[in-house]
Amino acid sequence: MLQQIRGCTACAHALPLGPRPVLHVSPRARLLIASQAPGTRVHETGISFNDASGERLRAWLGMDPALFYDTEKVAIVPMGLCYPGVLPKGGDQPPRPECAPLWRKRILDHLPNIRLTLLVGSYAQNHVLGKGKVFERVEQFEHYLPTYFPLPHPSWRTGMWERRTPAFAQTILPALRREVARALAA
Image (cartoon, rainbow, N blue to C red):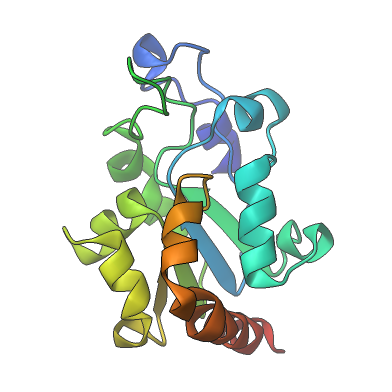
């Protein structure tokens, strides 16, 4: 299946840099990071969260890169597997709408050991939970446990919300780290 995914050209006509599906999976993974779509640096390197957003997400998780990229424990599957391009006023385009319906269920069917899914950002949250407000879901994370843990996208834009929301560092991040440790425990 990974060969099929890596060879996918379903959205090629709409991808400014061409198709390059980026995901990290193993059937033994116990934690799933469901994210938005690769950015330009991830497209170039083929490594998910290989940018400032990844550094922030790993800091939130209290996780070093070795564990983060250990596919035997952590799967990373974005809603859109390829870089979708940039919006006219900046920021990345939304994930291509063809991608999740084409691949997501098939990928998840090969991840039978997932204990916890981190829903990172609005696209992952809305796909799984339906329409809603990202920050409200993050602040009410207990409602989604033990299956899901909603998180904001770890971009620089989230920094202002973090500073205005002391509960994120005081309550949410410690709970996130506990739930991730529980999911990864043997």
